[in-house]
Image (cartoon, rainbow, N blue to C red; front, side, top):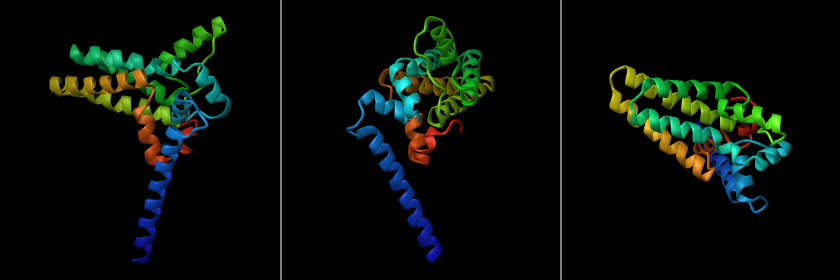
Length: 188
């Protein structure tokens, strides 16, 4: 019984800690709103400052994914959705999502601010995209076209919210599950 009580106490303590992390990130008075959203995605220090300067670039992957998922879902196209899922897979393992990589390539040529490598919290967003978009494509290919389309559209609407507000829903989920400090890791 004592061990069970200890586990319950540890679990409650961890839950409280992650909620405190999230609350501090979202309500702390020491940062502007955009800077809070940058830190929520895992960037810290000079990486966070660079991400703050390139705040609209942070929304680039979400904008591209939202557009592709909505088009793929509306057209019920497993090819479009699967291609988008492939970009999300790259975003899990590469320093940045392919859309961000393209931006960085152009930014280096023009001397604009580049977006530093994504951290675990943002890579988790790509992992969630991989699961949802991959699942959507599989459903469509398996004949459950409507279910696949609905999944793609739900993902597309979520990505639209992220692109419009800068609030990365998967990063919030990551912070709640594993804490803000783990969100700063270079990989998942």
